[in-house]
Image 1 (cartoon, rainbow, N blue to C red):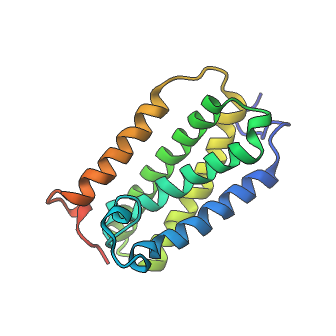
Image 2: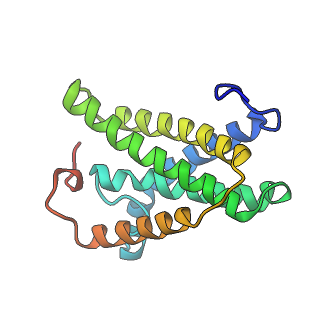
Image 3: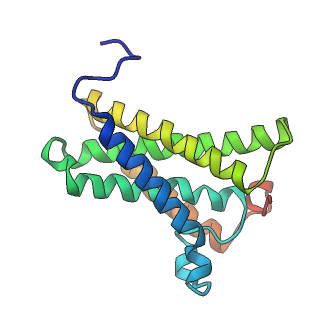
Length: 175
């Protein structure tokens, strides 16, 4: 099979649904901490500031939520849970790194920054991440434990660095 072709089993409709769902969840999550009255336990999952680290929560949690709900709703008929977790792990990792790299390239390389630029980078990363996730889901037969380790590590780091942010530029508000 050609790397650039879409496998016959892959429908573009679920890809579109999951991308739009993840984008909608991310847009809602952006405001959830403020709407909650600044509750501390909400801050572990949703951004509390405009730092690139806090904004990267918008990559991880919405994509993870959409992948899990997708498995519950329709993917469980075709795929094992471990297959969906592997696809979700690849998808969230790609979006995480794409968003951080895109932010720094645009801000410091091209002097382009702002809320809408950040959201455009986030949504572009989500789209590419979902395409990659569906490709992995349909074309990988060997499943490993690393997505579980990655997801638990990310959840632990988001929690820890929300409470104790390091003194690095990535953790200070950028906008």
